[in-house]
Length: 417
Length: 162
Ligand code: HEM
Ligand code: FES
Image 1 (cartoon, rainbow over the protein chains, first blue to last red):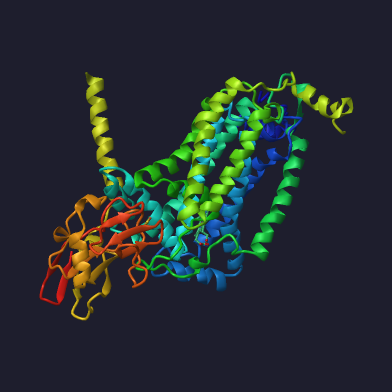
Image 2 (tube, rainbow over the protein chains, first blue to last red):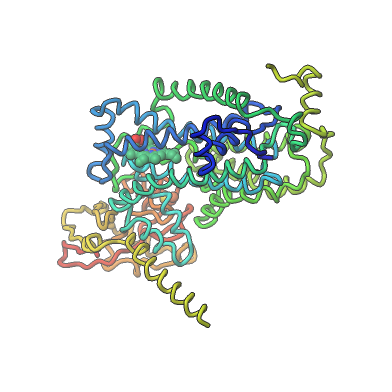
C-alpha cells in the first residue's frame, strides 16, 4: 500500500538527480504523498514524537560528550563541571537526562496503542518485533547512560544489573568479570559503558529505519483495525494531514518536556546520584530509573535468583511472541468488549508493578508484586490465547470509511479543503 | 571438498580475529596486578568488623566473639541453603574473612551493630538477604554464602588477602 510516489521533478537538475539517486522521490513517497488512514487518532502521533526524541537525545548527547570525562576519578566532577561551568551545560544535561524519561513516556504510550488496537497482528508481526528490539536497545542505552555520571545510584545500579548475568549457571561469573573488565564495576566498566552509550543510539537509528520501512510496506493500522481497501475513500495524504497533526502533538509534548527541564529537572532522578560513587557503601534503598521499575518489581517478586532474572527478561521477551499468543481475528479493542477489560487491567498491573518496584522488598509489597507478576504473565500466556476462542466480538465495519461514517455521519467523508 | 576446505579456513580465520575483540574486555594486566592486599588486623576489637578494599570490592575481616563462634559452629548443616561447616570457612575461629558482596546481586551487606539481620551476621538491604556469623546465607534471595577469599596470616596481626 506504500503506493507509487506522485513526485514529479520540476526542474532539469532535479530530473537529472532523480534519475541517478531517487531519494527525493523516496522522501516524497514516504512523508508527503504517503496515504494514511483517515481515522487515526492522537495515539498515532507518538511515532513522530519518538523520532523527535531520538534525534534530540543524539544531539544533546554528542555535545555533552564534548565536556564529559569517562574516568572514575573525574566523571562525577566532569558532570558537575557541565552543570556549573559549561555555557548552557545545565540546560543540555537536564534536557538529556529528562529527555531519556520523555523517550520512555512516548514509547510506553506507543506500545499501549499497539496493544489496544492490535497493531501487532498480521501483517505487522515483523514491524512489532522490530519495535521490541528498539525497546531493548533503548533500555540498554538508558541504563549505560545512567552509569556515566558516576553517582551512588549509577554505581550500584550498574552493580546490580551486571550481577544479573551471574545468575547464568556455570559461566555466569566469567561473563560478569568479562562485562566488568575486572572483579567489580570499576574504571574499565565505566569506559566501555561510555563507548557503548555512544554506539547504541546509532544502532537504534538503524533499527528505526527498518521499523519505518516495514511500516510503509504493510501500512498503518488504525482505530477500526481494518485494512485500507480503497486508497481514495479510506486514506488522506500524509502531508498536510499527518504532518500537521504530528506537529501539533509534538508541540504539546514539548510543553510537557519543558516543564520537567525548567521547573522540576530532578524530580524523575534520585537524590543519591548527587553523591559520588563509593564501592564500599551501598545506599540503603536502591531503585532504578522509573521506566525500569515494573521489571525490577518482577525481578524481586520471585524468591530465587535465577528465577527472578528469568522472569524479568521473560517479561520483555514475551512481547515478541504477542502476534502468535493473541488468537483473535479482530484487531481493535473497540470491537472486543472482553479484551478491553483485560487490557485495562493489564495497564493497571504495569502501573502497580511500577509502584511496587520503588517500595522496599518486604512483607505485603512482595505479596502484591507476586500477584501482579502472575497477572502480567497470565495476560499473555492464558488470557490472550483463550479470549480469541471464547470472546464474541462486536460487528466490525467493512472499511475504514464505513467506520468514520458510522461515527460522524456523511459530512465527515468530505475532507476539509 | 574445495568449498568445505575454504569455508573451514574462513571460519577459523574469523574466529582468530574475533577472539582478540572479545578478550580485550577481560581484566587487563594492570587489574590483575592489583590482586593482593595486606592488612593490619591488630586494632580490631572483639566483635568488630574491618572493611578493606580488595580488587575494587570490600572484604570484611571480623573479629568474632566466643558467642558468635559457638553460634556458627552449632548450626546444623541441614538448616543451611548452601551447606558448609563453619570450620571450613575460617583458618582461625576468631577471624572470619569474607568478601563483602552479597551473592544475590552484589550489594554490600550491612554489618553495623543493630543492623546485622536475624542471624547476627550481616543483612543486605537491597532485597533482604540475611547472613549468619559465619557469613552463610540463611534467609532471602541470595543463593550462596559470602565468598571466602584466598588469604594468609603473615603474622598474628597481619593478613595478606589474595
Ligand atoms: C537513545 C538515546 C539516548 C538515551 C536514552 C540516553 C540516556 C542517557 C541517560 C539516562 C543519561 C544519564 C543522565 C543523568 O542522569 O545525568 C545519559 C548521560 C549521558 N549521555 Fe546519553 N542517551 C542517549 C544518547 C546519547 C548519545 C548519542 C550520546 C553521545 C555521545 C550520549 C552521551 C551522554 C553523556 C556524555 C552522558 C553523561 C553526562 C550526563 O550524565 O548528563 N547520549 N544518557
Ligand atoms: S543484592 Fe543483596 S539481597 Fe539482592
